[in-house]
Image 1: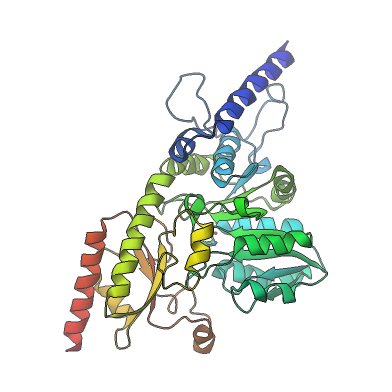
Image 2: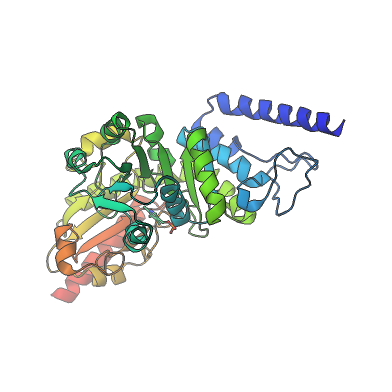
Amino acid sequence: MVIIRGFFRKFVFSYYNKMIDSKKLGINSTCVHVGEVKDKQFKGAISPIYMSTSYAFDQVDVKRYPRYFNTPNQEALCRKIAALEHTEDALIFTSGMAAISTALLTFLKKGDHVLIQQVIYGGTYNLIAKEFEKYGIEYTYTESDKFQDFEPLLRSNTKIIYIETPSNPLLTITDMKAISGLAKKRGIITMIDNTFASPINQTPADFGIDIVIHSATKYMGGHSDISAGVVAASKEHIELIWETGINLGGNLSDFTVWMLERSLKTLNLRVREQTKNAQVLAEYLEANSSIKKVHYPGLKSHPKHAIAASQMHGFGAMMSFELKEGIDAMEFQNSLQFIKPSLSLAGVESTILSPAQTTHALLSEKERQSRGISDRLIRFSVGIEEPVDLIADIEQALLKINKVDL
Ligand SMILES: *Cc1c(COP(=O)(O)O)cnc(C)c1O
């Protein structure tokens, strides 16, 4: 009897969720409603948090355990993330790097080769540089983000092509459809770090990319207060990543899973507004005589603007710009009033950072120059503040510096 009831409940539950998931809800409805934990006991408006690390065997037909990535909150939120990324399934991790390392190590073994786009997140670069040799995994970096640079570097043992678009800090754009086409012909798995775009501005699965990864510490969290990572992919790929994931143990605590669910409810509202603001700011900066160059895929001057337009729903809220000669990046940064210098990005508050002094400080000046990262480059994460206020802050900072110069 208990078993039958259990089955019945499971059937009703899955039918209900299929109904919600298959309805093709609008983006805001998806953010708010898909993948909630229903509070059947008290009918509260939001998902209850299940902090339990131990679950009775007779109530469910799966063994629930936090590190099996299947507590009620984890399972429910995975449905929301999969719906946002247009994939069948997803997994939630304790950080972006836990998601990236688990996904890569799932598919790579001794003697395999991975082809990596030249410009990638520093943490991923370090993971590969410091750990892969230990495991006997081979890797090559492309010379640029150009599609033509990928094919000649493929080997018979290439298992994965790993890309990041838009990339950090120069916002280069990689052609996702071309890359997935090249990989599919040869049975190679494609992975993308989709952090900078967020699922609101880019859904790589629609372009045939197999595995989509995020540092949810960034846009998905959005309030600079949680660390998390996600992987979204087909059921088949997620099953394999799950098998490696339970060995590596990068599951997120259920309290933070719940925080992430709360954040995702406003993902579209936040990112849409930030993206709109970024376009205004990019155009303002491009027209400003104190700025030498602006890197933003939404500008017509961006060399890959057309590709970005064909594969992104919006151009995102990350950009970088180079101050003209004679303006010191640190001085500019310190003269801003509320645009804060910050190592992280994607919060509702606008932040800036000097890559040469922080994220890329370990590279030699020559290496930085060869990658187009000058000492006067500023990375800008645009928040939800009104553009007029952001512009006023930049104006007063430039004015202050110019006065100092005189
Ligand atoms: C921050 C970041 C990561 C790493 O995420 P953590 O949550 O810090 O582990 C990976 N990729 C990109 C593009 C990032 O910005």
